[in-house]
Image (cartoon, rainbow, N blue to C red; front, side):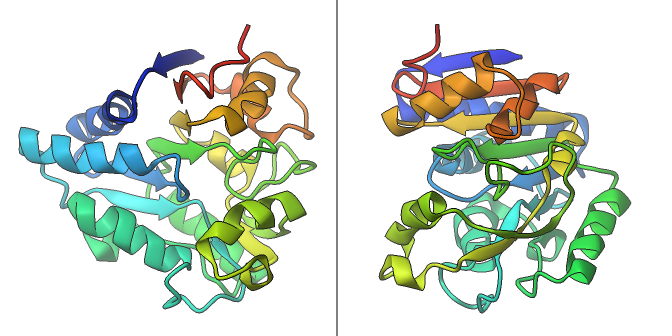
Length: 240
């Protein structure tokens, strides 16, 4: 495991983006796992900037989003179909037809189809991840099986509260989602986990230095052979 700590969002984002661009340089049709939320925004901004600077051809790159709210209209501005389109596909310059998001229907059939689509693409080369205050990866909340696969899940009150800032009120936040499982995430060849801010410090410390346990889903990354945490000083402040 590699842990890198940065003083500012620009440096953090550029380092994280370089992990993605290195994979694309080695494999022009690389498969990138895409996370939503505030943590990876600096990565996406730097990815777009560095790709322009380097003249990187992104036309063959494929993407798979981590998750989606269950039952949300994909056209809703806070659906991850919309967020991925507006925050990743358009600014970075990915081919829209090659970027996939789990179905908001969140059925068992949809979950299995998503697993099969990732496998058919050859698996994920670089999985971008944020870490929740409760240690979740994707929407794998505490208690998720460490070998779990894509499935429908219930969101914790803490996650709903955290996501309420994107909606008019907490009452408008969906209470269920479809998410890649921890086992699905661990199948990726490289994990890039970003965390920014003091609110993430306790989860980061537990995930990196604590035991591997279902109570701290992100701790499973300790067992991955190729993972880098990309942190600001506040998120890293509780590391020993």
